[in-house]
Image (cartoon, rainbow, N blue to C red; front, side):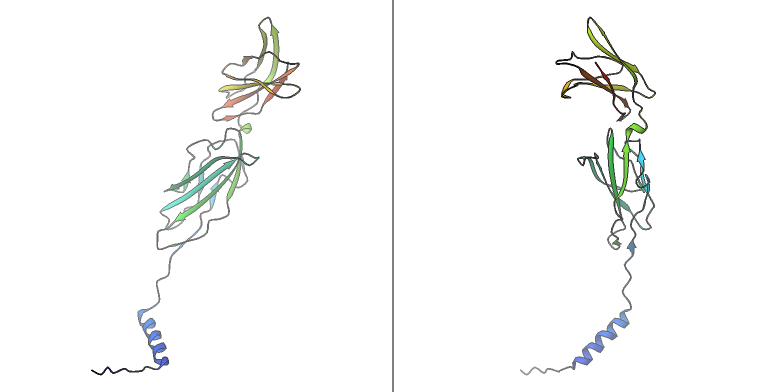
Length: 216
């Protein structure tokens, strides 16, 4: 049995490919998915709220948004690291991002479906939290002594829920005692060796105010 073969010039092959592409028409363009622009909190703003609502501009075609939120203490240790999906252009952290101070970074990546090209997210959005802005410090600290020992009192500021009290050695700053109270008074531990320092800070909601000090 003979098999006949026909040789086709390379130029004809190239022409056939060009004609085939032209007849099929241009490929459909892949829709782009623009990066999300965070609108609140403002970049580099300092807030007193420990669970601020994060919002961004809606992205056309987006069906969901991947939200990453990381809070760190100013010294660098991570406090909270959240990675979640949101169906609307807003996100409310389910837990406090700090109870005192934090640097918070947020990225939002939209999801426009499998057929869309997702643009790289914008550089991490940064803001700061400092609860001392909305939680005032205790004032007018007084240490009184009687037969039962030393007692610390102070003037309660507005919005105070409870207080944290610590006692340190004045020479070595070694912790000698710690406690919490809802009253604007606290029985201090006996100074173990020489003078001591009492520190009290106010708890307001989910954050703390600044420490106030008194020697005894």
